[in-house]
Image (cartoon, rainbow over all chains, first blue to last red; front, side):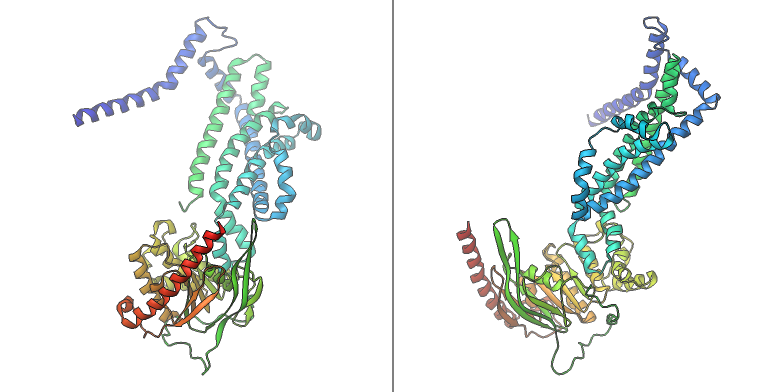
Length: 259
Length: 289
């Protein structure tokens, strides 16, 4: 009976793997059928084959890599700058009461404003320059990382700090090693949230006006009624942020290396 | 702030088994003078330590024993520079304690090892923090690792070790700065009975080799008598020193003395005192609530 049970469990497992493998192709197939069946307007809802052709054209024209590198640059640079600032100020506000009293109220007021709401003022300040786009991504990333670091620093085991004090640890090392590494597990969680936030704000930044970028391309294609290209752009954006999130998860697992 | 960089720390004395060759009158390395420590609580203040005076001689092993909440850990923290006096002062090696000093080591009830460092690097942390070269710090660490018998685990991370092993690393880490005074705050309190017995024997052995002055906080009378030259019994809060008992039992000791008649007589004295104090503390709590 137990053997029969195991067989049944195996069969169920194999079936779910099979269904998992077929999930996306089935979805694409149904989409293709519906789009070609003339139930819907194929210009507004193009079949996947049209999308694939549009994507291939995009790649062949050389614009794809131009757009990709422009978007990747904004996300990466914005993420790095926002992260560096967020961690630095998070350590300071988490550790020093006076700094926290000075900055935390301000940060808590600014933090809940969605970065997209800053688009109009950013256009006034920076025009259509690259700096404005970086500003938006940095803004979105900074507060998330700051808050995670601030909380992480406050949750560092006081016993570790006392032990380090007793061993004569200099002040600087106390911050850069004991406090920072003690808070690292919290910081890493904040960083992962910041990865997806940096993609949200990228969308706002490129819609606000750009000269290259994946979201910029989507917008141009929309104005030209190239719906295949629009959907191709969406797929590229989805794939990109998916890869970013997964690779960050892999890095995060190693970042807290002692676990 | 209190550390004088001009005065080199004493040399590592791991091998020298002889007690400190002091002059005819032994020097008090720790002097607590009329020390009171007061904590702010929601409704006013609580006196944790009440006008305590005591002296610990260089090379001595002294235990502080008392019911929980009697202020013995607070007194120890004041010796460590982790707690500021409200009144009176704590002098260690002739200087008032206002902040932690690397010539005074501390072992807490929890090991508090740095989870991101291997055993070796945990122990090397102190010497590195004091500006020793990496090679020198690691050499000190390796010597200590051998002494605590964890050579096989030198590169292991703390969470992979048992509680007893972690506490041994914590002791080695505190010794790596060659402290003149080692303060221990119920270091074996969180361990199971068997591990604790082994750790006590280890500490007795270790003590013969390091020759540091040790102040040991515990609520376990057996432990206090087994390890110490002197046992200070504290009263229930506010903390005061009730009795200062010399343990005249011969050294080297091992847990075998736990059945010695002299030992048992001493223990009976302690137990009587503590039982009266415990009852007092309990009644105080009843009247407060």
